[in-house]
Length: 77
Image (cartoon, rainbow, N blue to C red; front, top):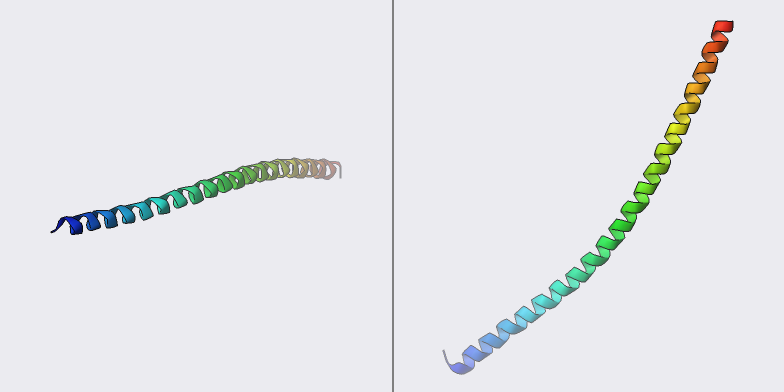
């Protein structure tokens, strides 16, 4: 191989490496943004879950109250 071919091959490899690094930088930025979005979504879902658990607990309590009142009425009848 001549020196010109070696330099040209080295330059081509450097360009390919530079393109790949640029792609990785873009991917990293995209993944960071996606990760932020997913963390926000996760936080919202946790809040929603907590609200639903609370509503379920309240509903369960009311149902138990109604059942207890029905039992009392049944005993009185």
